[in-house]
Length: 207
Length: 391
Image (cartoon, rainbow over all chains, first blue to last red; front, side):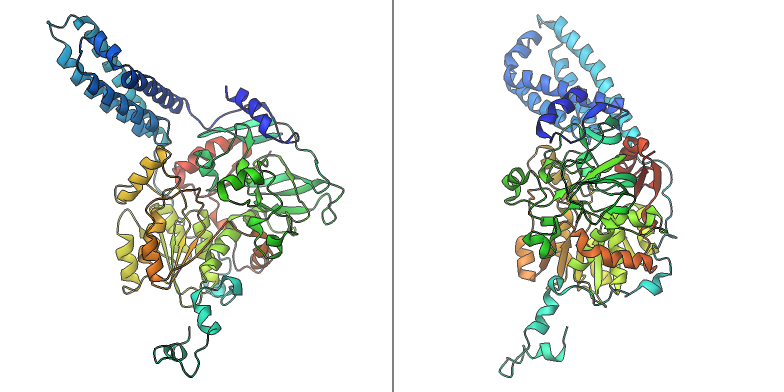
């Protein structure tokens, strides 16, 4: 897919610019791709809940709770945005938390007097399974990207081959005139004899 | 040839691409001997810089050997050893003649496109989106250098690549950060961010004679490297930056504040505004996370100077402009005008005043580039700077 996109993007390039002939290893790992897939799934479910809540409530026998379903749709969009961001571990955990909320809501509809009780049961099983996947994905992404090992000590890397004492101040006073800031104004605007007592402070304490 | 190619958010690949060719009489082709991953490449990696396209070759810190020159290039020949600045400059326009090379008026070949975002064009940049010309970058085996007569730094033999490579970007960028702050002997300078640019800025502040340098970060390895240059350090996850800076300056605040962080500052509950910024960024309601700008404005000494060298992308919220105005702060900022500083900075390397190679923590083949993007982004293995060598 990406290879095709790189081909399509040639339209915005100059003829002599490098063109991809063959793609190689990527920095994007499989678990990151799973995280993103969950994000797109959130957008799909979110769109259904937000724009067709009656379809959902009718199938679950939860008529009259369309407002709640819409709110869950907004939540799904939020989770989707997070899953597609660089903080997709938070996105996956957000989905897992949402799954718990979904399960709690579905539990209220799992009643004998609900003619769609079987559907609710199926939904509970599906959400529980997805919840496990969401949580496992979140942990896997976090584990992949977390800092590992003890931090190294670079206190022997001064960057001054002849020692800091040799280098300190070697460029002192070499800021070009066009890069001087406020202190230069003191020299540029000397105080005249008619200046106020306060202005004469500049003469007593030049910058 | 082999190159590191951007395919989407967090998706950098080691691809085979077509070799570059001379397209214009002013071009040169460089066989890359060394290149590096810049902190600002991570903004591309995260897709925070607009107008990247799948298939774009990355990289703007590059050096190598000239293997071919166009007919119009008079000051380069095959075999010359050169560092390539990240900024493509013509040397002839009004801005170049004024020394403002990073806003060169002629080298951005997609200037009209960029002007729709920025009002005007800035210079072309290697491997840094189609906003800055869509030029192929130098994390590759070969690089086409447009405007080659003015877009190169000839470097002598006898000094290793490690010491010279960073003339392309982070060394002059750190220098300009310090110069923009107008550092004078006796100044107290606070530097936010101890990544590669922050480290260079610390060293340049030493060269300029700053009396007290305070470096702010949260990663122990970076803080230890800052301390190696004599900086006092603040770990912002362990203590209040504002309180500590005021303590170190007897309540006066630093004379000069330098932002070497930019648009992707660390997100932490210790800094609640960063959480809000991150949420807005995800919703595309804000381009950057400007926590450092806010903190600098708040803590800087009245009539002090704020230098912004960290890269910002666009629209920022909740900048305390009234505080800045009433405190009479001076702001200087911009992408580095690389050629303006490089002669002087090369001399300082030759004289032994500084050796920029200190910052390299990982030196690997170009083929490991995709893995190193992830390692660098995740701050794993105490990674601060990655140098890549094509086969």
